[in-house]
Structure formats: C-alpha cells, structure tokens
Length: 265
Image (cartoon, rainbow, N blue to C red):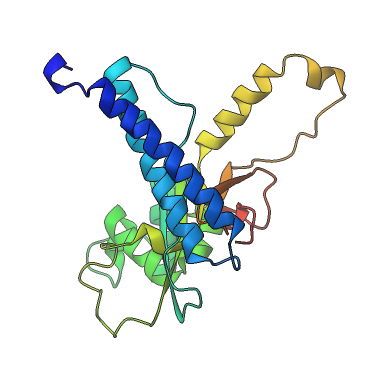
C-alpha cells in the first residue's frame, strides 16, 4: 500500500494500548462473573476480539508483521452466541451436495418409483422420470425424505459431496409462510447454537498430520483399517461466547451430518 495510506506509528501504539486495556477489562469481568451466561463477560470478550483485530490490521499495514492471535469467527468457528438463553423455537438449515455419478441408475430408480414398466416413452404416467434426469430427481426427492436419500445415495446413483447442518435459536416460531419466499436469507450467525460439517477436506488434513508423524505410527503397531469414513467437525457455541470446532473422525452414528460428534455447549 502507499505510504500515504499507512497508519502512523502512534496509531499502532494506540491500538496496542487498546488491546492491553481490553485484556484488563476482560479479566476483571471474568473475575466478577456471576454465572455461565454473564453478559458482562460476553461484552468484554467481544471488545477484546475487536481491539485485537484492529491492532493486528494496523500492525500489518505499518510494519508488515502479524500477531499470533486468532479472531473467533474465522476458520470455521462461530462468532459469540447472542441468541436467547431459553429459545422457544429452532430452525435447522441443511445443505448436502451430491454428484450424479451414475445417471442410468438414477433414471432406473426413478422409473421404479414412478411405476413405469417396459421401455421408456414420453406418454405414460411419470414416463419422463425414466428419460429426464431433472424429472428423475424430482420423483426421488418427492418420494423419499432427505435423510433417507443421504443414507441410500449410492442406490440412486449419487455421490456425496460436502454437507452442513446449522441449528439456530429464536424467541418464537415464525408465522406460517413468513420466510417461504427466501428461506435461506437473513441467517444471523450469532444465533447459531451449533453446526455440523462433513467434508473430505478434513480427511486430507488428517492425512497431512499423519505424514508429519513419520514412522512413529508404524513402530506402534498396525492401525485399524475400517471402512469408508468421511471427515466431520462439530462446532458449538461455547460457554465463553466463542465457537469451538471439535473434529470427529470415528463415524459416530450413521452417515452424513450425524457422523459429527455431539458436543455440549
């Protein structure tokens, strides 16, 4: 960046002093906390995170240096929870990605569900389900619940991609039809109670960690070679207001988001 846009040394020093002050206020709030849901601790935590982020940015802009601090809310963690302590309603937001790996299997399953016998044609009831992948998807997802499709995806010629499930809290249930026009907009990250992510990228990270261990694992004996297991993480809003990611690679429960370990807030 240009010299004119760089912060001054005095501005960096002031930001550092702000971090020190925020640390003192946070410690004082923790020492005086009255319970797990003390709002003063949450406020001090947020103020400290804001001050540390501002200092980190100024330090980098002025001196091309960074701090070792990680700001909550980055790298898949949750921001401090700011929803109701006793929610009267919950919303589940689910995304599951699939690749159409075997189109012929997809069409055959759709024809079976639609009750189409014999050669496919364009006139019989539901016949397009046997010749159009779009129609086939409509038939299958109209017949089966998403969880059943997730557990039987290979039967339908599908291959799993990434998936995520978010649980958000609310004071009350929305009015019927209130959000149907835009169901996935206006999600407040600070109302997320927990989220469960499944992705092959977590397995890749594990493979890198195992590679760094060298031959230690070989010397320790044979490893259990189980079946296919997608990497999963569970992220829960913690008592200190920060989101904590907890990795689980043991396949707890069934496939999909259920394989993320359950962690209490």
